[in-house]
Length: 175
Image (cartoon, rainbow, N blue to C red; front, side, top):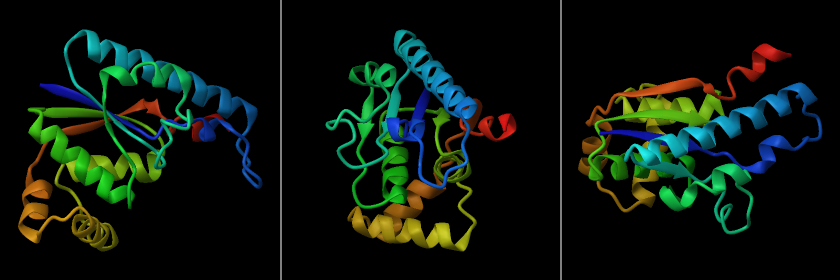
């Protein structure tokens, strides 16, 4: 069964940041992408396909920081909270996907250049960057996993594809 992984869609991605050159056009485009992600979450729900939501910061859901239309879809979703590290969250999401019987996943959300691609690499058993590998090892320790469990999770190849139109990758093309 195919699943959807939604990565870090909090409101702070839509707010201006001191020193950030992101234009108003790109913020509006990202809000549009978040709206499309909420529609995709709904589509997955009504077709019986599971959705995993990766919280961008510990407690973001409770603090009402998740983009509102996406938050409305969370009651259908399995939330993977942010605890100690992003890589711990990414590994935990793969374990949940395996345990729930997913056979492949689509990945949407932000940030394309880091979190989204890291999730995809972990799902596709493609963690080749030594720094990312070390981050996985440290995160597995924080999760209480031994090296065998980490290897079992990483080596389980679950086909994953990034739905680029539902990530912040197109934003760089706007400016």
